[in-house]
Every structure is written in structure tokens, then in C-alpha cells.
Image (cartoon, rainbow, N blue to C red; front, side, top):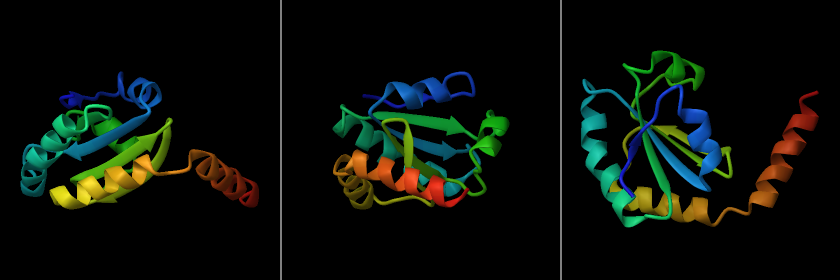
Length: 123
């Protein structure tokens, strides 16, 4: 599956409609973003069961602000609508493949339990 461009209008629906979604936050002027783009695109072709989206932080400033993006590129991963990974910096292909394997291997019941415990402790 090729990457899709995400906007403020499509972001939330895309997160909720896909089991696993990887999002690359980028800008055209960003050198590391341009270096990561082919790695991200190749992974999207290799892992056709996962959704891959890109957010142009220049065109989607409000969305980037709402997501707390302070450094690009930033890679986010969602599984079952839950943010399970967020890290700035370009990943090499091997590290991206390792991350995808880790996301696939998550026990989402355990993730939900941990989120509930954290929410309960914050009250």
C-alpha cells in the first residue's frame, strides 16, 4: 500500500479506521525528512497490511501543533486507534522493520490495561 497524505480533515478517521497506522510527520525543507521518505515508502510497499500516512507539517500546522510535533521527522505508530509509539528522528530501514514487528507483537489488552491504570493513577 502506498502512503496517503493526511490532513486535519482525514487524520482522526484514518487513525480509527486502520488496525496499524504509521505516520511520518515531515516538511519539504527538512533534509532528514527527505532521507527518511524513501525508507518509509519502501516499508509501505513491503507491509501492505499496514496503513502508512504522511503529514506535511508546513501545510498542516494546526494538526502538527495538536499532535505536539516539535521536531521532524517524527514517526508515530497507532494500533487499534491508540498511539503506541512516537519518536523524532529518521530511522534506518532495519530499525523501521524492527519497530513494525514490535507493534505487530503488542498485546493490546495489556496496553489498554496499562492505559487504564495510568489514567486511574492520575486522578
